[in-house]
Length: 211
Image (cartoon, rainbow, N blue to C red):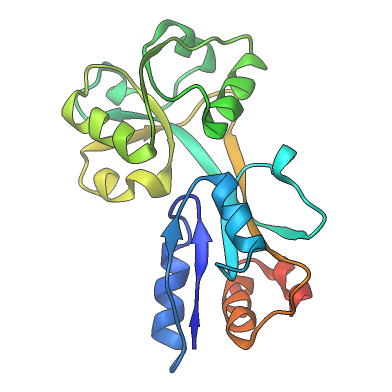
C-alpha cells in the first residue's frame, strides 16, 4: 500500500523515513509544492495528506481538515564568515540596518516575516529576492558577505552541523510558524493514513483525536 503525503517544504522528511523503517509492507512518498497546490491536491485526492507552514487564511475551505503538529522556529542565518557570526544573539531592531536575503514579494513566508518584523517597527531592507529556501541557502553559502537570511533550522541543518552556516536567535522574541497537517474531511482515513498519523502522534499527542 502506498500513501502520498505532500508538503510545501521538507520538515516531514524525518517522519517519512521513520515510517518506512517501521511499517513493513507500507510505503509513502513525498512531494513538495506551494501552499496553494498542497491544499488543491489534498482536496482533489491526488495526495492523501499534506503538510504546510503558516495559517491557511484565504485558502481555508470547509472540506479541508487541519491540525497543528508543531511550531517551527526561524532564526537569523548567516555564513560562518559573516560579521554577525560571532554574536550569540541579535536584537530584532538591528535588522533594519542589515541587508536581508529575502523571498519573493508574493511569498506567504515573506508576508508572515514582514508582519512579524513590523510588529516591532522593523522594516528589513532586501538586498536580493529569491524563490525558495534552497536558493537562499545557496546564496548564503556562495556569497556569505551579501547579507543574512531568516530560515528554519530544518532547512540548513546539515550546513549548521558542518559549521558552514550559523543560527542566531533574536534577543526579544522567537519567530515561530505552525506546521499544519491537512486532509480532505469528506473522505475517511485509509489504513495507511491512520498508520502515518499514529506515527506523527508519537511526537504530537494532540493528533490522537484523529485515530
